[in-house]
Length: 329
Ligand code: F6P
Image (tube, rainbow, N blue to C red; front, top):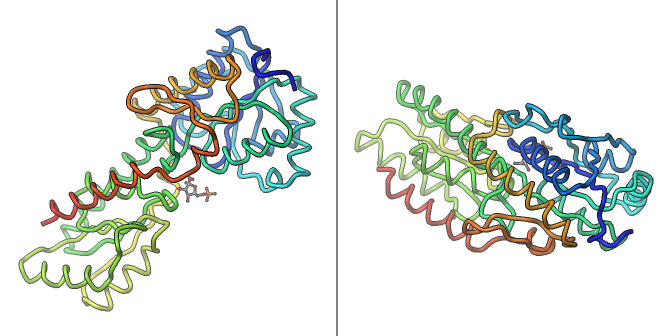
């Protein structure tokens, strides 16, 4: 490969689960790259497209009118083939064939792990842009799409509250985020939930049922319990509560709705800043790392560190949980 600071042509791809704001990041990356005088190639379907040589030319017009749109115009995929050395070798052939000097990888945890291995094996320079609704990346206070996903889930929970109160029911609502409780703890607090179940919330069905029974005796009629998908299944929790309390309980899985929709302002702004910063970073020879936004500043963090658990974020989640419990009287 050419040395990273002699980059002339960059390739852009989105990888893993789509997140609202990925398009805004593509737009920013393409136009910033053009501003730097680079040629830009788009790679379709993430690492799959890199393996199968699905490469397109991009210019400023290719990204017109995508800023407001959810999903990703470049398409995305989870590539099991890229996890194999053979798959990565094919991807490397595509990089060489298209004269790509460096990659901008817009994605999450798994995408950065792949980019790190690709750098170690084939010395393909890359810079990551954190985009996932899970917000499970170290080295950026927020990932692109996480705020919009919280608002989407919150909107659904606000609507469910109408039934919860009218029918005096208990609702157990499962939200996305894998093992990370970012969405669960935010919608729990903002949605006025009585309980949030996530990996570190010390989930105890016995305690929850006893709180419900005591609350009913004091005239509390409705309950919203938010479950983060990495900790329990909403239906299982609902079954236990129903069995133990004999109250009317419903389970609901919000699912992929949380990934859709137009990115809110915060995510568009974050995507625009990080897309441009990724190009700045690759232009000066940075590689094997991700750009992030930490305490109002751009920070470059190695992929190896970015995929590790962030202790400060975990403390923040626990604080939000304690506050949710205090306010849920
Ligand atoms: O990583 C984003 C995410 O939406 C997770 O919250 C969820 O667990 C997962 O992707 C779902 O993946 P898929 O779209 O492959 O079912």
